[in-house]
Image (cartoon, rainbow, N blue to C red; front, side, top):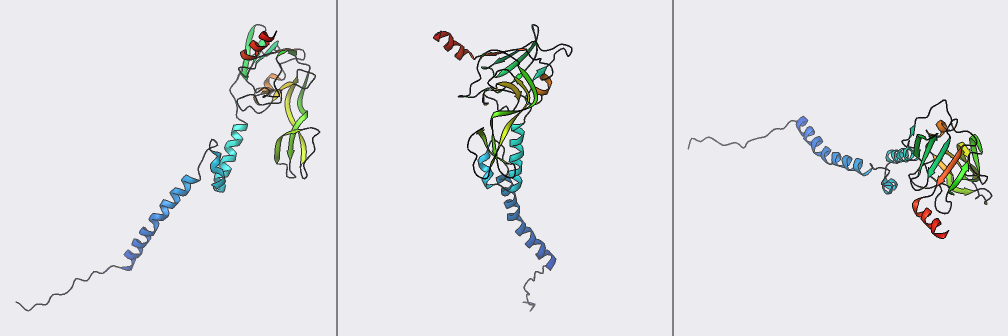
Length: 236
């Protein structure tokens, strides 16, 4: 033996390295939590059940999406001769569509929303009786709170008004009356199916276009869907 003594190996780590290592380890679970939170707060209008457990930002996103759905711009066609009036309007209940004619030519068409069950739009031959650019319903409206927020959209004129609320009649812009009972065509919300109290709701960008082009006295033909037509024929 040479008599040399062995010495244990000493490992020295500087404080800066220790701090860096501690920071790296602590940040890993934090990043995972952030990712999970972002996933849990993101949702679309088709999944409103997630709204109750969402963050404020996600709730705002939901409301914006809902607003887009309520005011969406449905596609339509409008190609009339501007020097001539519309001579005939046809509304097909089964299709939930409206057609505008100049003579024998169909110069415009688009989607509508007619009367829902219990408030069915009556088929038959009518004509435009009056025009009013901003009309308010004398039959239906909504209840609003003191801040002007809508509480109930199915209110009827003359019903008892709940405490703390007020009644506001439904606006019906670009109103074209076709019956003495209050039925008419006007701008309104189109959910994609029959949903009105009997009127014919028009897309918000189409209504102001047709309003000046349709004269008082213009024929309006409301055509029933095929199933209804068959029942009427059978009963007669």
